[in-house]
Structure formats: C-alpha cells, structure tokens
Length: 351
Image 1 (tube, rainbow, N blue to C red):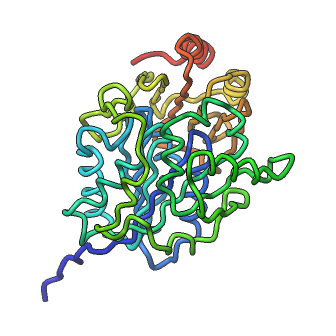
Image 2: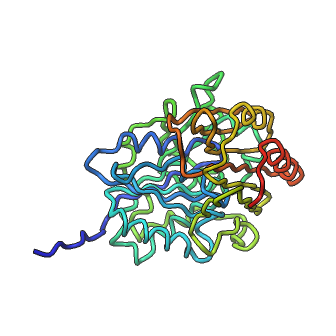
Image 3: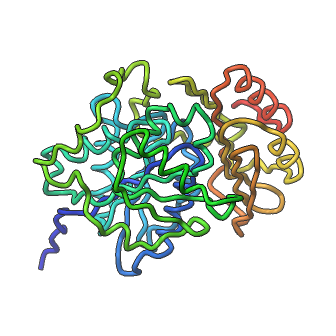
C-alpha cells in the first residue's frame, strides 16, 4: 500500500519579534523545550548578519521534532519576500510541522513579514496566530529606541506584548511602558511577563488580529514614509544558503544598512580557541550586540553580549560543526576597530 504525503494545511504560525538583544532566541528556546513530544515544530530565523549564529544556537536533532531554517543577511521581507518564501516553502516541505515560529531580525520590518504570510497562496497553508512583541522596558530610556520606526512597528503589529528581563529591573517600569504605548497610539494590548526567558506556551494559541482577510488592521497604522527597500532595509542575500565553514582558517562577512554595521566570522571546526583569550577579548567590547558559539579547549561555549554585559555558558558538548561569532553596532568606526581587535586577539586568520 502506497504511503501518502501529509498535506500541509492550516499550520498554526506565530511571529516572535522584538528589538536587538531583547531575548527572542532565549524565549524560542524555552518554548521548544515545552513542545509536546509528539509534535513537529519548525522555526524560521532571520538575522541581520550573514553567518547565522541564531540558527546554530537553536539547532537540535530533528529526531526531537524540531526543524530550523535560516534567512541570513538582512530583512527577509525584501525583494518582494522571495528569500522568505523560498526558505519557508523548503522548511514546510521538510518539517510538515504542527507549529511554525518565525523570528524576524530586530532591525527589520515585521509588518511586511505578516503581509507575505497573509498572501493568497498561504491562505490554506498557514493559520496566523498571535504575534508576540518582546520588549525590555529599560530600552525606552534611550531616545534612539523610542523613535526607531521598526521598534514601533513591532509593537503596532503585536497581539501580545511580552516584557523580558524584568527580573533585572530595579523598579516596576510598567508605567513607563503604558505611557509610551499611549504616545504611539497603542491601547488595550495584553501585556505578559516572561520569567527568566520563559512564558506559558498557551499564549501561542490565541488568534491574530490579522487572521481574517477582510480585517483592515494591517493598514491601521500609517508610517511616516513608505519603506525604501534599497536604503532603509538591510540587504538580503539572493541566496538563502548559510555560509559553510572553511576547512582551515576563517571566513569574514560584513553587512551594513539602516545605520547599522555587522561583522561576522565562521571558523573551521579544527580551530580551537583559548577560553581565557575569548573572555579577555570579548568582555571589554562596547558594541550594540554580539553573539557566538565557539569551540574552546574547555568545550563548546556560547557567548552573548548585550548592554555592555557579556554572558557565556558551556553547552556541555566537546565538539560543534564550526565556530561562529558576530557583532552589530551603529558606529562605523567602532565596528572597524572592534573587528580588528577581535581578529588580532583571537588570531582569526582569513581563509
């Protein structure tokens, strides 16, 4: 008797958006840990950088029912959403998931991601559910974030606002959040609090305000100007393939758009980093964001720098497919200086 391929239809789909360093990957990791064992979940990850660190951090054996696909190199809604559609179609065909999670880059325009997902050819394939906008309320003290258009858009399209890192606050900042939401014309959005990066997965089940084609909410907030895909969006690679590690040395890749600059390296798996040198090199850095997964003599470690604070953790693995490191900053001179410092101290020889 011939086996029939399961039809992919009405896959519950959630977008998890938020600014750089707000904790999107951490929240997704926590959700994956709570996934029902019999279900297959798919995760589509978009990064500003080119090398795909988030995908490496999330990667888990597909035998566990978790499938990861990346769209590196900028905002995946550019070029008429083609990179996103190609990656999404490949992911759906491979995973045939019971749920799909999408993590757009913190510098992209999630409204256009929603528009792509709502197009006619996905109408029977995807069931758009709640969009979660993650926010670290402390960011509101920074005028750059308050006025940053993608940051505002992330909140405008949300069905739920999820406050992260509140355990690090010195006081209750909810009044500041409510004041800001009123200032940008948002009201009546439910606010949830993630506890140490975790949230009840039941939040994923709620409906999206964009679910019905007749709903005009998608267009209820007007932008100050139309998006210029060539200038305001980060560039998106024509290819959706992530860069493969070289056999020796390292490959360096760069990206810049919308006033931000990223430098990244992907290193041969034979390159073993000195743990102490890694700490001494990365700890003093002042870039906006840095993350990586590195093979050291003590094992595989992950590193995460945000708000001037470096955190590292050992994965418990002795080996990894390769080492990857990437940072983002809005200061061009700082980007170049940091790149030189990392290459010199960590001996990142080009391939």
